[in-house]
Image (spheres, rainbow, N blue to C red):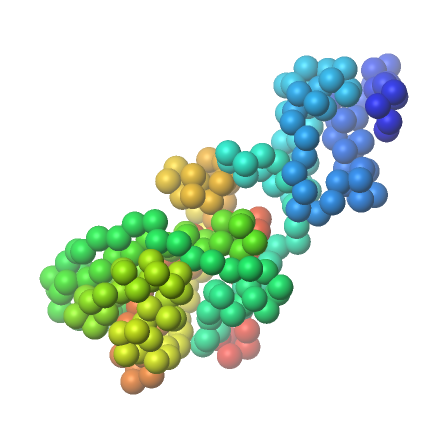
Length: 247
């Protein structure tokens, strides 16, 4: 549809659906490139001669189909194919993203000291009440937020972890500075839930959208637990791939 064309309001097809189909055809034809940001709703409203509510309904339908992606506070984008994220004995965000020609980065968004409760004591194999470091991280690929993670470490083993991670943006590098040269994944438990408000803000998701939740335990090379993590993954941007070694 060109700017001079009008919608056929006598065709018996809802106007918002006509707009939806028009935009879908333009996306398929390449008029809007993968990953590009759509013009503002007001621009579409003027183009089609409708109110913004009608445009919003068409865009919502395309978002529900996975053709568009709404990033809270950033706008609406043509959805890219989800990135593949292998889950196996060696799972490293930076390596995985770099291997798909994406620029990875990590950012510290919070940290605290706390005592190990029953769950954390069991996972990390430490006594109840052991001093732990909790860190909140945001993992990004090509400036797009992908994963919000909460990780726990035994403080005595990585006393400078917060400062080291804040400087490097890499968990692997921060652990290496503490003398832990390598580590491996023992297990990953994957579930799904609706995004919470704080995570929605960090990931740029609308409330009510799903996230994949990955609870994982990493061991040092002496088979001793070093990191327990609860990660929330933007489900429309990343697909988790469990390799044969992890089955």
